[in-house]
Image (tube, rainbow, N blue to C red; front, side, top):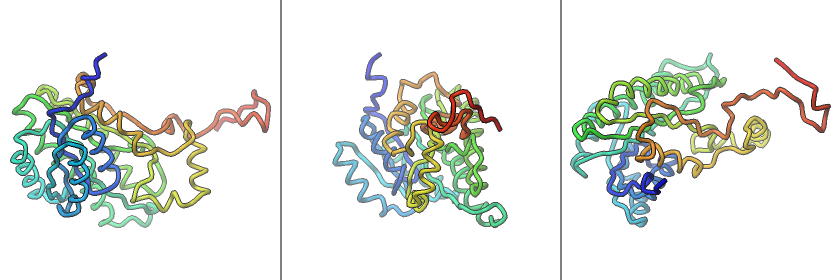
Length: 273
């Protein structure tokens, strides 16, 4: 197998929500594989320090303002992206938000904020960029999902609904756009510490509870996503489309033990429920 399968030299990748968090880690991974970048955020000036970092890596990077809840902003972003490089080969639909509340407390506005950002925004960004990819008969679209697309978690009703929708949207768009040489896949992280959920990781008891349910016995670290995003962006995944790739340390295998610990009972002692 040639390492060239993972080489993104000469490719242009557009990453939404790149002013902080996982968006920046995903961008670094793509730049490290040779891609030039178009980076978006609601405020273009928020991207400028990160643009300097990418340029120091030897890659080009262009900042573009984008509010994924505004249709005209999406259209203007697509035009700016095309003007910057002439082509977009890779789209990483990363922009998202979360409202963490018990279901009884979720408001109408909470629901609309999360679904409009995470699901509606991802679709219309993909639609605009795929129109440009169609002309080239080539494209890689990577929708950022979540382990909540396959598991339900209390307190995350709108978020889980949006990420479940992303998984279904990925399959639909893969079927729609495969004839144009465009693959569409979903990269679904498990439990990673981000700016949005950092307060949870400050709770030692909760972290222990989480780690106990992850087969690899640790939360995700941002660099754990590097290989997955480069794979889905590269020729290595040319016959992969409509799939959800979970990068979750194995938590999606299930959170219940079928046996209790050896130190506390006999191996044959079974718990079912």
